[in-house]
Image (cartoon, rainbow, N blue to C red; front, side, top):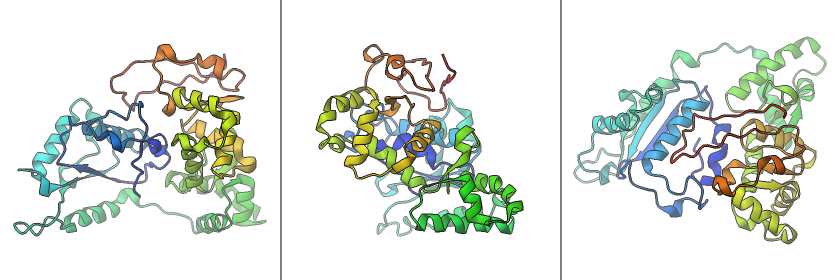
Length: 348
């Protein structure tokens, strides 16, 4: 799986990160960790991502893996552009990364010098640069480790075939009760297996089903559909060119992240994205994933907020009347540590 590189996708990367996986982190060795990225590569001007260095992106990915996956999820380092680098070796490249991570020992748990590889285009002097055989052997060896071995009851294969059938029918969301019926029909004694089946497929990133409140009773069958629903909200101004009556709402949303419910429906309608009766379910899952905070007539999308603290409208007034009202602690960072978050979601 290759993650989307556009800034608009960053807020929903955690949807795909899993403890039942290992990761390849690909790094351009021709760039210094202190060098800032080309601003043309960030399509969200004025956000925290717009002025990052390559080193900050390295920390972002390592912290994302550490936060959302197993604390020792294996990471394979792949340094590219070896043909454009001078005097770079596997050891020097690995040492530079370890040095860059010196303030966070927990991140080093994911790395191993033996899982570090350099690649580049062939040259007359070194035709072996693009030889990926050692990298392929490393990937295969990790895939064969005992950590992945698990005995799965044969009945659970019905869950996989059922999910494939539901996607073929363009079913995006299904209740747990209906999923039980689709899997086992009237063999009621097998229904007790369904929570464990859903847990497995949730952990490997095939579905979304959290064991919490109303979310435990619904299953997101098509994760990409949920991500597309969020992506359509946050990408660019052109989404609401035809929603003229919502222009003021759009400007408010684009600057501070406050999204009126009317504008939300307008954006989805303009993009031809059909949510049908699943709007409430979508919003609940997005809130659980940390993508937004749900209000009654307005919602808050943190990744869209470009305002400094003193210019932000009070969140209490924006989300007044919502079932969940966040108590917010605002901190000013030059670089925000992704593994640090505070969420107090108790009623006021």
